[in-house]
Length: 409
Image (cartoon, rainbow, N blue to C red; front, side, top):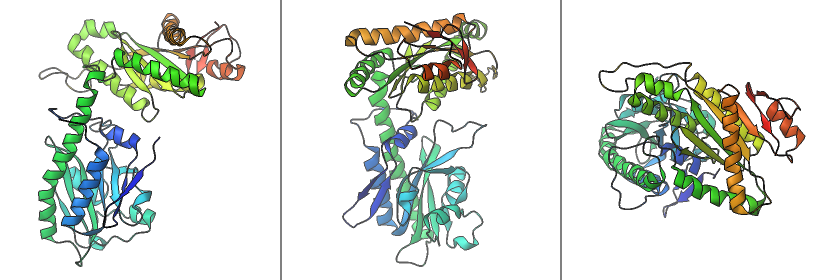
């Protein structure tokens, strides 16, 4: 994972920016339209926003916080606000971290969508002291404004301790409210640019990569694994009982289920370096650079469990249609394989795909809702035992709670 970086302007103001993994997560949101002229660097945008805010309203410290689009709107999970960019004393220690989206003054700003002025935080019950305790910093006054895109609040800008004055006032708040429109436009442009850049690589329905990109990435990662002597694993999974859902509820609901499964995939493999793609009609594939068979088996089991316990279509699929709350029906069969080196590149790639695909169909044959690991004769016995749960090579066994089988080539 790339480390958080810091940028310093000509006046010596050092701004700390969240790492690439956090930025990538936050950019996984869609806007209503997309027509960017060029790719935009969100790092530079975040820096520019904080520099400009500090010029309009000079402050000792400040932050930009954005919400997590992968869990936003999920009634069962607490929303989070990520510190995307910060400046001031102790800010290097909080950039990239997160806090609940209903905590503190910034949480109040985010939840209400309204600007917030606290002239004296010692008298403000909404102030959240934990950040001060962590950074060893003393906040005295705070001003915060929401960041809104397409009528949806996605975060907030927070400035702390006014310079050149005792505290913030209504004039500072008015200035930042005007500045908020500029901020929203800049961030929206970054989101649009990211979406435009990905369009040729993505499946239109699920948002996962398409199979063309998958094969390009597989070629690149196979060459890299051979050159560096590193691991490369592949997960195939197919949705069990998906046809029954389609036949019973129609293709509109089926499409909704596919989208929801794609969101689960995004969440399970977040920060793993994986590339997830739609492969054929109902199948998906996850490429895992740097992951051993054992690690990939653990990911596969996490994915299987997440899909099996998920309640699908909890919201209305269309106006006038009821929420279906499909539970205990849709599961997945998972096949896992690792690259076996020492052959021609083309043969290695084909063998990896075939091994993972075969393992997936074996999982289906064994009863569905389980994983199957394709294990070569050179796989260390300790790994084999951990993947299978026992030392036998011709039977199935538990894999973190599910069952898997092994094939010796």
